[in-house]
Length: 191
Image 1 (cartoon, rainbow, N blue to C red):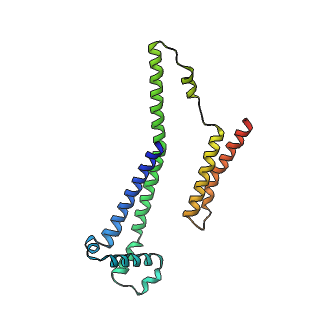
Image 2: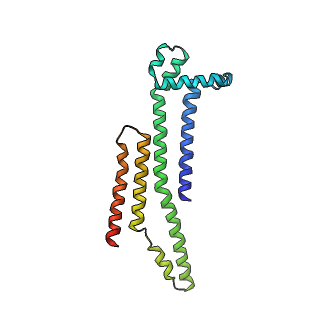
Image 3: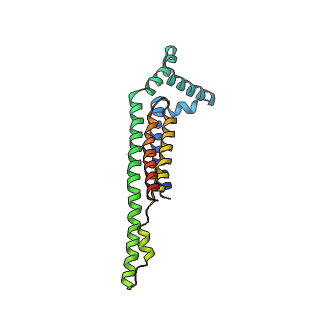
């Protein structure tokens, strides 16, 4: 449930930032709503194709003048890139804050309820059950940690390899894989 809440908040934040960037740049600077309403579906599709062509093929602009050139220059402007970077940075910061704060908050709630339960036993004069006290000392085994770290590392490596092609950035995912192997070795030695 915690992970679902976290992913939902991150998804909503990302969508909001992306919508704001798209609204600020594409609609208000390049194509007004009036223009979009006046164009037919075929003309809109043609305009989007032209924008994509201009984005990936700068030579396309040599014969283009007027509004098309203006749209390309605005689309490739530093302001557009800055707004995208700001959106990405804000999303990353929100993600980091949520990753740190949500587990702390849920652990704090769990500890408060546990302490209230022990206090209730003490006020009634009853002995605290041993199972309750032993439940505090349960921790993940090294084997569980190894599986989590290796699978996380593989997922990060695959995601980075897919997103950033022709780069060695995927090797960042090897760090958790190696840590997971270390946990597995520790598990095998102790057992």
